[in-house]
Image 1 (cartoon, rainbow, N blue to C red):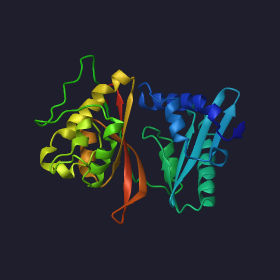
Image 2 (cartoon, rainbow, N blue to C red):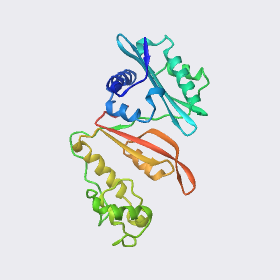
Image 3 (cartoon, helix red, strand yellow):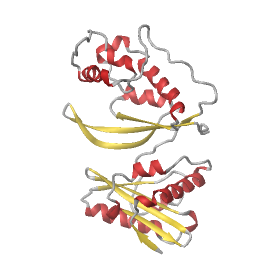
Image 4 (cartoon, one colour):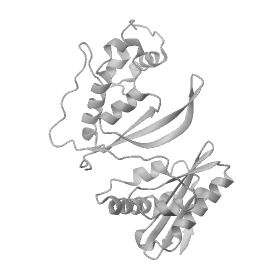
Length: 278
């Protein structure tokens, strides 16, 4: 068996390996692709923080680690036909050793819930379950979605660079030229994730309408996945995303300081065109 770091040339093979594992565990087609793997592995130092196990038949296991402040994240996947050979334990050992060398004070191990072999492996080494992420999907069907319902006087248009200054001012609470108290012209240009403090009384339904517009436009642009990056303490935005079927795909703990407080960033995802799980 050959063990070596993952390289960018391996991304297609790693994507196929993980997609096959996900398809087997969830009994439904996986939508994982090279773009997902490229995004996931863009942060780790692959030369030192990743491992690819190969045999004549191809990839049999992969693993990598990431570091966030004092917390390390370890990911390891072993092919179902190669379990019982100690590869999972070896990946856990490699991950813990590397994260310890990086000065991490704790480790988060990531696994898929249907993987019944992973839980006893990890709990037997002192790990405990702390969080679950659910994949929630929505089937859009062939009919176009309904038009967004907006408050009277508002409309959605493509965001243009000419509106950047006004939009920036609306976010920062400034008053750019042409800004009227109680109204935020930049928000009429269709930016999802806006802050609506300046027009709170008029804003009801705007965020919902923008979300409807984004979901409606996604298939026209050839998109199958939408991502939302929301600060965890922004419960209104989190609830809006989850209302439209977004699921919590990731958490970046304490990545920003807002008004003197360390805040977590949630990554929420929505896969389009999949059957809704039962």
